[in-house]
Image 1 (cartoon, helix red, strand yellow):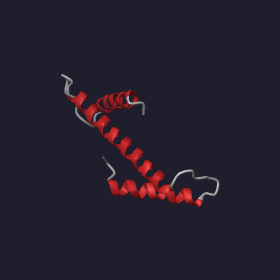
Image 2 (cartoon, rainbow, N blue to C red):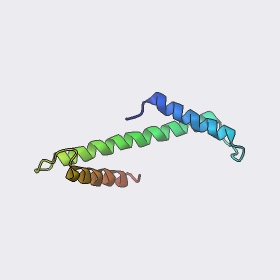
Image 3 (spheres, helix red, strand yellow):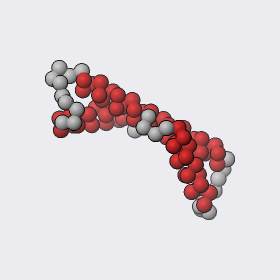
Length: 91
């Protein structure tokens, strides 16, 4: 994961602080519960992103023709496999 837990907690706290400053939002749940849910969703998305990255790299590495990372061909194949993984997981 590219963002550590402390940063996720900080970002979710900033979001909640913004929610507190808005008068047009009516809260039906405790804001800490909302913050925890935001942090959980962020963590899940970032973990899925890591899995997509790993899967795309593994598929490219399995090709019989070795493609060097950083080349335009590698970038296109990486994006293709990354997006396929994310689409398969509905993200």
